[in-house]
Length: 303
Length: 316
Image (cartoon, rainbow over all chains, first blue to last red):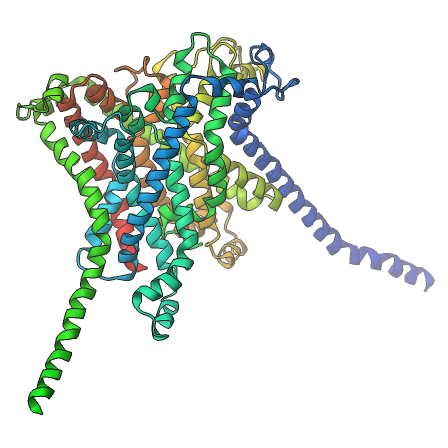
């Protein structure tokens, strides 16, 4: 009797432990699998980010470390010398100023013009609506290399080559379709009821527009203008063709000639200049990436 | 009395019509500035592109601002040029490789994002955005530095990992290797857009459907084929057509990475070819003919994307 109860007492915990052990094992296996994926994820992260890391790391290294046959990951004696050298290079400040002028003009002009068209596309039904959409997206798809020749010839005809104005106009054409398309998406996201409610309250369409639509679409305007800023700042082929004088170039073109201008390449200086070129873009991009990411696939992704 | 009433009725009937006309013209007024800018700065050059392609137009003609009409000579010269066909074939292969790698790797990373812990996901997303934001010209310079034969980190790492002795290996020695480096650069820069977009699309796949399929005994491959992929299909179609269009016309990366002094007929891609033939050689007429052919090819490639976007514009 006691033996039986002993056996029973001994058997019970075992019987109860079996499913618990299984669930623990399953949880452990799940945790292990997640850990493996985490390691893979970290590996992918390191590979992806490495070029950016290497650029920054090199920019801060003294020349002896850069040319060493066994490179170090982080500099032992970090220096700002390369940044000073890059900024002291001929035309650096002129070129920064040019980039800022072009980008500023392109952002201001494109936002005003694109916003009007985006309102038309988002809020009105009109004949030719579809044709306009095709035109906008069609231009978005044109390969830029194919447009270099006609744009160059036409700009040369009106003496706009080697003028910042010529580049501003060119960027405007490339970027307007994108700006119209993205802004249209933002405006369509505003509920119609809000606008109607404002009109019932007695405001005119214009009143409804300025008091309701504009504040709501402001984040979209900011996001789009930042993206226009970035694209114009990064643009290379037209800037290279249209602006021929060194003093007239933009930062990306200046950077593209950096490598070729010195016999023994100044890697530290090149990486410092690259970092300086990328900094404004990275900052702005991080600010608005979320809002823009889906512009080009609008509709396909509803997130 | 009746006259006055009629007059009032008449006026009140007329006013809405005027108002209606004014109202109907609003959208046209709104799009007018865009139309003006685009026709002035793009329409005219496109017209010019067509006329240039039928003209002998070099530096002398550029200065005189007048070309010589030569009919289809530019086109027949290009189409009879072996270089053109070789460049076209090379660009098609290059585009296929780049698009395949970009979409494939980007999708794998998107699936990885679903499986990792939150902190890894945040880290990886931040890394993707960082890479995405790198200007193309900057990325090229970093690539030049990392892959240079003297003290590039790539050779060092490969040698240290005992992949082989890559000390002093020149990655820009052969055409294949050159275009391989360009591919690496382009795929690296394009992965983030694909990965982030596909990841966003994955969030739309109904969880219950996946679980139901798994309970029914479907393996991961089957779940992807029958549940995940159909939901993601529209996203893949758009990403693929966008990537094809971008990679087919790519210029900055191959031109700068191979180097303006080293690009030649043995390694041209379409974008570089049209630029060198037309602009660098100052043969604008022939360049215009190549440009037109290139635009035509891209137009055919992008019909799908444009139609899709127009349909979505209507659906919304």
